[in-house]
Length: 109
Image 1 (cartoon, rainbow, N blue to C red):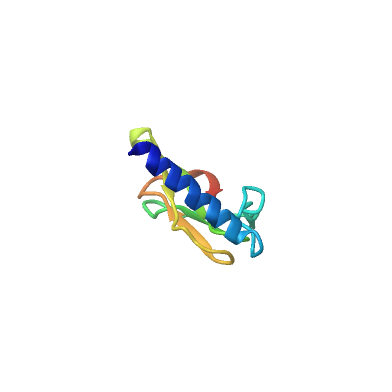
Image 2 (spheres, rainbow, N blue to C red; image 1 turned 45 degrees about the vertical axis):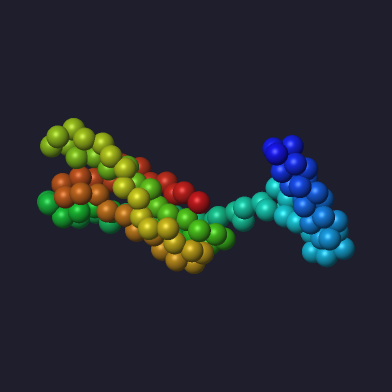
């Protein structure tokens, strides 16, 4: 039974490839290259006292989100906060918790 299923799957794949040969091609890894994301310099928001600190970044060319490393000295605690996934031209913003500061800013795409 397994041999018959494999044969059927192989036949179906061959038929699809032959049928698509004269039409728009299938995406290959080279065709499916990710568009380069280009970002502006991040903006940092520095509060005072107990006010939160945060950062934002604006990028073009794909989907992205900001990633900030925060530090809370009162308990010697390091952690990462992420902004929302945002599409090209938008702005992603992330905030540290109260009494924590932004130590590093990067982004993911």
